[in-house]
Image 1: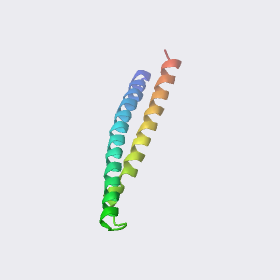
Image 2: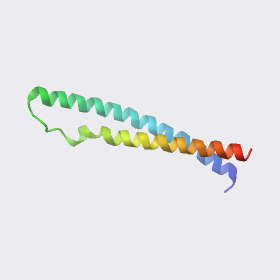
Image 3: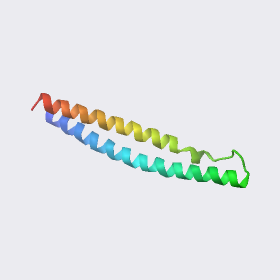
Image 4: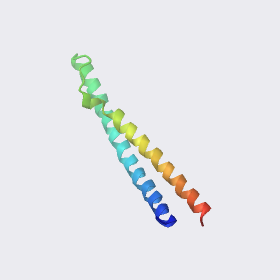
Length: 87
């Protein structure tokens, strides 16, 4: 694989993982709002701690978003270094 192909792969990886990060963070925010509403509803009706597992999925979306953002930053740094070293 040529260096130019590797640079293109790193650039595309940075863009793709950045997009995945944004989508995951939006899903995490929506899941957090649903979780807060479920907590308020459980407190209002006196059902106690019986929340469904799907109401906790904001943790997973948050983790996916952070991982994808980290991978995007890593790909961007590698792409930048390869551009600086091999102009």
